[in-house]
Length: 502
Image 1 (cartoon, rainbow, N blue to C red):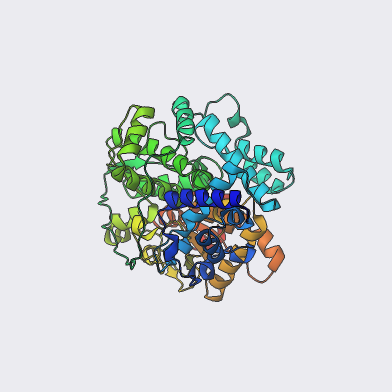
Image 2 (image 1 turned 90 degrees about the horizontal axis):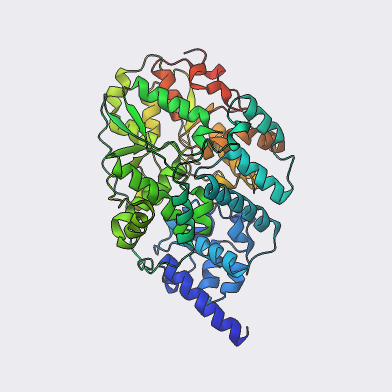
């Protein structure tokens, strides 16, 4: 290594340390991060080796690794590190630095993932909210993958999940697009506040108090981008569920996309500033709770809320963009949290059609329970609260081992083969333990288990067809709704028959 490269690597290591708060000398190469990594088998340098490269100062080699483009951001590595190292943040910071410096892998995986993130963020910058058809068109033009998912796209258009006319005329754009442009410009500037130093400590789970949700209340609602498109049935069932539980919903006025995977994978600043605008709008509207059905959206909002409560700089920046200083008053909660706060006794009282004779695998995925110290509503290794809801509805939940394994998350377009491999492992374990169907609380989990199931089953041909239900669909149906009225028939894997006997 030349003297110039050594100097550059030392500067890069300083940037990575500042961005993550990690003391890389604390890593003793135990290998737990790699052992739990769902994508480790696809990587040239799995997490343990990436940490060693950073520790030893070989930052250019770490940035050229194709591992950065297979990382799904599930945070399993960080959650299980005995030294409290933020390994997931290291992957994100390396990816961001690699893009800025041009020191990147030439692997095709990098080109596909970068094309997706670029298309995604350009779409948000233009519209304020994601327009999924426009995103897919942009991605396909960049990658020349024109036939990928063509049949699925046609089915979505016919089912009303995608509106080809929505991209024209700007009718679905937010009013505050000028604020979004300011956020993107601000994200390109360096922050003056480094991430607090992380020290080794024993991680213990301490569940937070459930939200105080009562019949007759009206709470805030952040549907996120997917629920107006490819996950439209989730929005329909959430609204119907809340109607049957006597809970009113009020959307955050002029909400914007949280940035999802693409922001946090490429720009730490952008991944905070986009959700921070939603926090400010919810706070200004006087909301105490905001129902956020998408696990990824909720995760980004909860992480950002914590940052707002601890960062005067972030508060100032959000006020400069929006004219509103966020207070952190509004608490963003998921559907499972809402139902826990509502109470099992009250929920049971409203059940009209118990879910008899249906064995369900409750699939949490990764971001509902991680990071543990921020999400903290259920055990991060063996969550059980969704099972409690299923049993309150009269169903049977199976005991299985893959309930928190990542399905591939937002890489479903760019890394389809990997997503099919991951979902196959999940489905095989669920069926081996007697599950007839999945129940989920995340549109990304649903898309990967439902839309990708046909391709996965063609490759492996060793599991039966498994319907995938949103938790809100099952609550609504158990409380008296017709399955067709909550759009269960819009799923890729036929899901109506299993509920027909209720």
